[in-house]
Image (cartoon, rainbow, N blue to C red):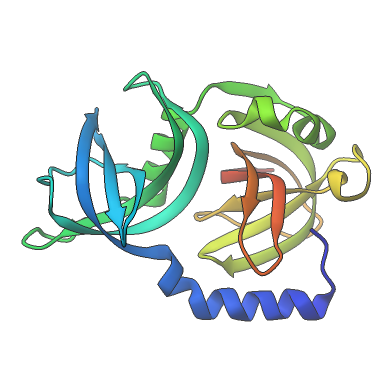
Length: 218
């Protein structure tokens, strides 16, 4: 996970240049399922089928929709639908021809993710999150620690590194990603979010565990 500064700069440049192309999607609706004020869609994007979930939108099967990628979750169980998806992309801003453009603000997206999360695992150490990552996938965790690195505006999010004195090597540094908040270097904070595992962002940046949809409190 660790890269020299030069590679980090290259990564930032490449991601920034490609961001619009990778976060925006267009696909054909194959199936839809409403879950409260949200909708799950099975879509086909250039021959590849996958599930997305976002703000409730009534779209007929066969229609082409556009949406903004927020995050992927694997082996995700919807408490509302009582169904587990191998992989689902959480999205915002679902639009299709003939409808007024709609979006959902980050706080609503976060509320949706946390409502659909598998549960709250409570307060854990950095080492515990790494050790139990498979069991924690899709669950909410809180970690108290010091901010050791802050990188803003990468893939539309702030990447906040937290250390609490536990763990060794790469497993002593846990990354929290947030679209709505950032933090200051050296701050002691409580970071909270949903655990995602085996996340590959390309350019050699792979994370065995990362925490998404994060919020921070001093």
